[in-house]
Length: 445
Image (tube, rainbow, N blue to C red; front, top):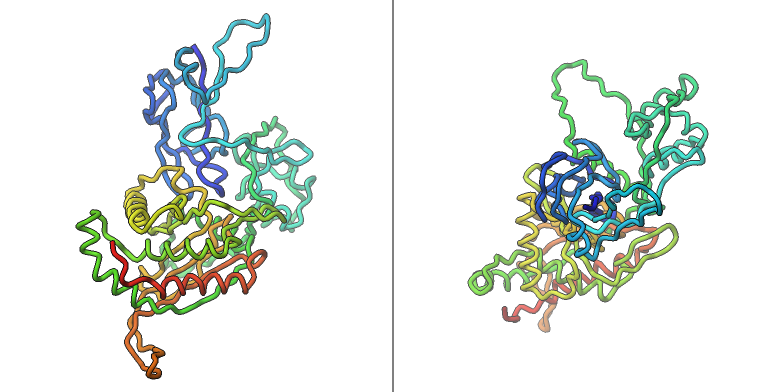
């Protein structure tokens, strides 16, 4: 027999932890290969995690509702040694000579490859999350002062709530003493050095009028809220705008959408047309397709386009089209429709919401003409496409200028001014508009 360690999978570049929603198996239960073991959730997606091996659940290491760092062991499954030997992803731990015989333990990543993690500690060997350390740095709290703050999290961990409460009472007295109990430090996936969140206590709202309804944020909205604040704190946002004449593109789609459906069984929307224009522009301006690690610029050779999609709950999710530059218009249309449909049904896989290098959000879907989107960290730019409206526009012809009714839209690009200057951001945005305006209205499907 062999003991298999199930690992909390990596769910995306900016995701450091996940919440265990439900265990589908309990100790003593038999588990088949690929059978669902538990359900987990992040700010991006809820997902069912299958077992990579067949065996028996031996131990569950975290309860439901626990927040677990990426790379942590979450459960133990006991399985036949023969089955383990057949899996190339598993390596048995060596047995100490003369030690009592015991079942070897193996580590199996669950549903996604777990990357090595780094531990965030201060000199007192107590674990602090990057968020807590960021708050401490922002508020000028020393490591010695931080070590005295009582933690209410798992294994005495200091949480965001602990920090907020401490900051509220800091001026009224000395730092509270940490309870005298052993604290077990646990590893956590490291985040980029530049990703820091400013979280300060807000004044308490007066509800004395009574004519209010207090609505608690759901789990996903809380995480989205923190992620948006972190992005605005991390990146100095600049937004540029252009207006594009997309008459040729609109007329081509109107003429061909029925044929497209008959030939490929897919409804062609404007989204794949926008993404195609973005991909071509990224090829011309590759320094948009980057991320930052401190003062190091990481240029991504893969072009993975995230497409923001609204969920029925009102929350947003960003499925990613991997290697979008390898797909033609038919392939992009199929990917867009598939990801959008499964996003609405909450059936996206963890690997389908990670590793994006640039994001497109279509605010025109809601009738908005333009927007100032917030960058999806750790990317450095995001494009918002506005609604397409008929407008009178001046057209230059060989016989002089004329006024005609054209299909016009605004494009807005928010970018990280640390690495994307106005020249690059503006030129890149203009190139996207040029690609849309120069759409070949005579191309076949």
